[in-house]
Structures are given as structure tokens and as C-alpha cells.
Length: 338
Image 1: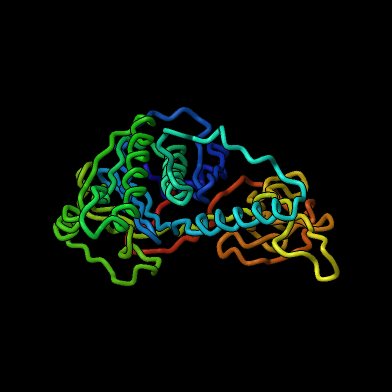
Image 2 (image 1 turned 90 degrees about the vertical axis):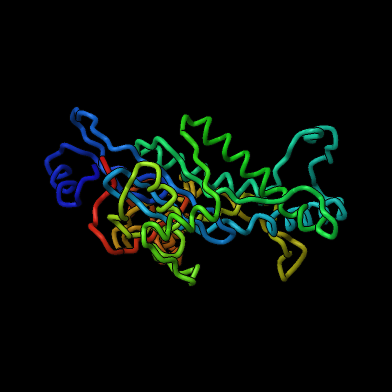
């Protein structure tokens, strides 16, 4: 643990292991024979950010995986669009659901949708890592937000308060999963980076280890006692956005006032986001359908490769929620642990 790509291919060829791919797009193997557990303790490091986040899974001897995540930023705009459409439908007096005012979460602490989307994404990634890795601890950089009202800072503090509430929700959800939570301040992260002799690049959007994963690695490596990052390769995760079923499109058709229905999460009997292997286009996922044909975006870039795919030409693999791109880095390359 972890195993090498050559040994993983040999186990698959001999029938001693079967392939498995989770929603993060990480490929690993599951042994089909009894294996005595001799695992090194694994610690997950998380460096939260507004646009990008750093992830790292570190053991006492090996760096199992590093990741860089694009944070979801579309929720606030989508909520505003939904509100506008709902008000427009009520103004036109067309079909609508009745306005409900007695089932609100009055008196309860409610996370704003955009804040909940960010912290819930981190929990979902943590759950996916737990499905394939024996994680014992989680180390998070504690983002400090002042919520006490100060003179001339009321608006600033109100904008930061959802961040404070969201991180407390995340901390409790992590503990509920049976994981030991460790918090590190920003200055501690900087001191650890200097102690390990690692540098951080100023190009925050560049998909390299030194952008964000380096901070996640140093705060995680301090717990098991790792000495250096044995692997600096990177998984770059981009969340796949699915358009939920809407009553109709935003604008009516050009030839009249007919508004066509739009959206949905099912395409000819399968969930959108299902990873498939096409006979011609390779690894893709189901993005939509029209007139019995499927649209297949590329599993890495998200760009359309075909809009006329047939079901019989696709081999169904699994369902994914993130597009994953693998960037090679310095260090020994290995596969995910069995």
C-alpha cells in the first residue's frame, strides 16, 4: 500500500482483482482474495479557498493522492434566476405551486445555498475518499472570520458570518463520520511549509502541486510524521453541473409565446453524468439526449465529442460527479491503494 501500476495490471490480468472507479474519477482495484490488512495511517489535508481548494492524502511513508478542486460558484446566480422565473410565472398567472409561508425554517440556523454548496462539496469528496482509502484523520486550515459587529464593519462581518457557520457544520459532519479532526491556523501552515522546505507558486489557477495541494500536504504530513512529498502528481477536479428539470426555458420561442420544457437529470433510462466508454470516442459521460440520441461530453475537458451517440455503442462504467484530469508531477508514480 500503495501498489504500483505494473502490479495492479498483473492482478487484473490474473483475475485476483477487479476494477473500481468512484465519483471522483479515481481508478483503483479491489482484491478478490483475502488480504491481511497492513495499512499505514492515512491523513487527509484540506486547504479551503474561494475559487480553488487543495487536497492531499498523506501516510507515514507515502503520498497517496493530491488534488485540486474548482469550487462551485454558480449557486448564488442560479438561485436568483429561479426566483425571477417564479415571480414572472405568478405575474402571468400561469400554472404555479401555491406560495407557502408556514413551512419555513423559522428559528433555525440556515446556511445560505451558496455556502452550503461549498461545504457540502467538501463532505462529498471526503466520502468518496473514504470509500477507497482507510482514512483516520482530517486536517483543515481553520479559516477565521470575525462575526462580532464592529464600528464601520457591519457589512463586512455579515458577509463573513455564513463562512463561520458553514465551517462549523463541516467540522461536525467530519466528526460524525468517525474521523479525528485537527485544525491549523494560517500562520502554522506557513511555518510548516518552511520547515519542509516547500515553496508555493503565485499562480493560483495553475494545476500544479505548488498551487494549493502543497498547503494541504504540509498540514496533513505533520500528523503522521511524513518527511517529504513522495508524489507530486495531481488530480484536477471540476464539478459537473447538471441542469435540473425546469417548467420551461427562460425565453419563449421566436414564433410565438410557447416556452419549451428544459432540463432534466435522466437520459434514455440513465442518470446524466454516467461514465461510459464509447467504441469510437473513448471515455465520455452522458450529458443529454435528443430524438433518441445521446450527447457525450469528454470526461476530462467537458467538451462535446458527439451528439448522435447510440446506447448500444456505449459500455456503462459508473456515475461520476466531477470531471477528473490527471497531471503528472515529480516523484514515484503509483496507483491508488487496493
